[in-house]
Length: 169
Image (tube, rainbow, N blue to C red):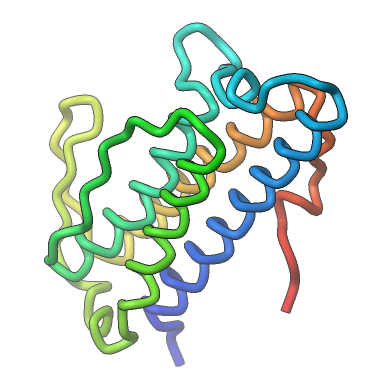
């Protein structure tokens, strides 16, 4: 029996969003212990041409909500992309989680065959829904989570592989 598109999306995205929430708690604790401003920590980036920590959150949450919207042919909620504090990042993740909570398994039934067209870097690409999810949406989502992780590690925040992997059920 094939795995459902719902199982490949909503619970996977929710788990990744929980990882992002864990990172925010780690930033808060580290900032308090070291006497540094959390706002400064979340403004860091790995390289001048990469997005800062806040941008990684914005893209990870966008990846989750846009994947669902593209697969279901619906509109995703729009966020301002102006978060600059831990509290604002928590709220962005919470809004994304609430959106995902409202998605039923039925809404994703049959989306593995749906045509999804995206234009990354200005190049139009057409996918079958399942291929879009497995070749673009999930790798992109995890890229931004892993980059957020790397930014924290680079700044000395004690995050490790088990923080990235999250809790196992």
